[in-house]
Structures are given as structure tokens and as C-alpha cells.
Image (cartoon, rainbow, N blue to C red):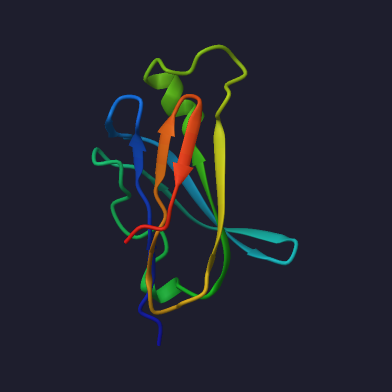
Length: 119
């Protein structure tokens, strides 16, 4: 029985604040197949209200989080000229331990981003 789960959050590093209202999609990748398995929106704390992949759906494999940052950057006046330098940001990662909590945050500014495996 698995007990792991996946969470995320987004921090606007240019403003030094949580990024509210960012749409996120989670995909499971199997070979060449890419299946959307969850969607969420960040709340006022820059987090999703629940794990984006809860324990009951948590299995080992390759995943991709897509953060739709362009709409957020436009709405906060940080977008700049079109086309945006950053719009949709895909983060591909593997889950190898079905008993662990995986936290994959996005640190965002209009011209850069970073991520890490958090706790």
C-alpha cells in the first residue's frame, strides 16, 4: 500500500510573494504517451488546496508538472512584450519511492525559474 504523495507551490521571486492563481496540470508519462491526470490552481499561499497527486493515486514513474505562468505574469503586470519569455513551464521528474512525500516547487520571475525537490 502506498503512502506517498506529491505537492507543489509557486513563489514569485520578483515580488517576494506567493503566486496566486497559477493554473497547473500534472501528466503521467509512459513511453511516448502523456496522460493528464490532475489539474489545480494555486491559492493565496501559492499552494494547491490539496496534494496534486494524493496517496491513493501515487505510483512510481515519470511525471510532468506544467505551470501556466504566462497568465499570472500578464495579470500582475510583469509579462513584458509578446511573445513572453516564459509562458508554459514544464517540469519533468521521476518518482522512485512510493512511500515518500515529493514536493516540487516553482520559483518564478518573468525571466527565470528554478525548482528543487523539497520536503
